[in-house]
Amino acid sequence: MSNHAIRSIAADQSQRATRRAILKSVGIAVLLGISPGIGFAAGLSKNDIQLVTVIQTNTNPYMLQWAAGSQAFADSVGLPLKTIVSNGDSQQQLAQIQATIAAGKKVVLTINPINSADVPAIVKAVTRSGGYITTQWNKPADYNPWDVSANYVAHLTYDGYSAGRWTGKALFTAMGGKGGFIAFKGVLDSPPSKQRYDGMMAALKEFPNIKLLDTQSAGWDRQKAYDITKTLITKYGDQIKGVWAASDSMTLGAYAAFQESGRLGDVKFSGNDNTEEALKLIASGSNFADTYSSDGYYNGALGLAMAYKAAIGELDVSKMSHDQRDGNYKQFGVDKSNVQSQLTAPTPQQIMSEVNKGLFNRLVGPELK
Image 1 (cartoon, one colour):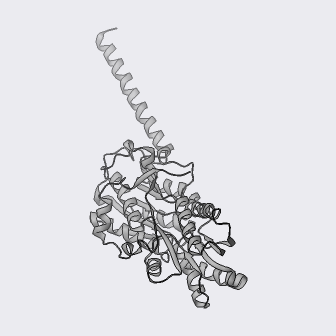
Image 2 (image 1 turned 120 degrees about the vertical axis):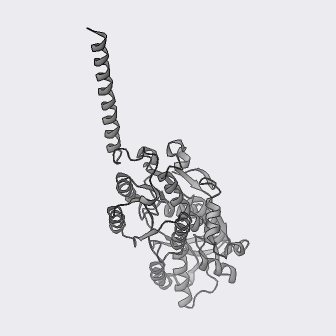
Image 3 (image 1 turned 90 degrees about the vertical axis):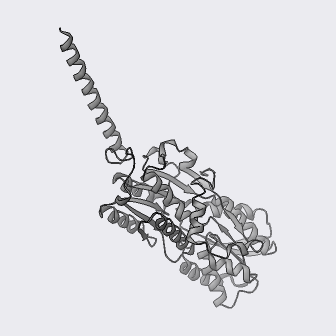
């Protein structure tokens, strides 16, 4: 056989091997739920991007802070923002995201999902279309961004156990270490709700003269908490000396019910989310004892910033550690000792100043499983 024929055969075999490698890569991409080539490109064009932030309700002050933070980021890069409000409905949440994807642009999205179980379908919809996503707060414990694709950039969370324990201790101390209280969880299939409640229950063990009278789920909703509290006031009356809730919105609903019933008296209230209304009540009176801050403005801006920078190629997801792709971010407690420093809402420039210190500046460690 001539040298020319040998070289021809070798070239043909090389081409076939290359085609097989390409087909294998495409197959892997499809299995990962992304379009061929998606997630391996240098970056999306800014003009092809639709920024999206997804919140559960527009009656929860924390989520309004989140939306404002996302808007601050969108304004900083000169792109419009679409804010999706899911209204506590998982099907509506997914349908609105799918409709936005169908509009044609590549979706770059951060979301506070209603339930952990909602996350895989949402991630699949976004990544398969070539978009980029960060999730926050809720996802299945064994569902990891690195097992999906580079388009599922990261999951950001906040240590609910420490938050619940701190707010529980602050409430029980404000109650003078004795008396009965009622507690409100958020959405039942929500890690932060579970973690905060577990942390509060851990704190309760340190106060033998404090009694938990009743626990209810109010879905992070102020009106639901108000309605439930009305019923609990009738049931327990003056036995209630404290109210603990996994969010300020629920605490504020309970507060309104006691106020309307003329029974504020010496009842103490504990929240979580560092909302403006809660902060003003902490500063101005003695009933609202404390809240806890994960900084909603920062959360909404950071989640979107991370997804966007990955989308345009400024953040190399392949070089991120597992902690960076699934990690806990810094929080702090607020009571009368430091409430004054929290009373003024940040400007968009101040929000972005914090984000621009670095995407992982507030990262404190891996997510608590």
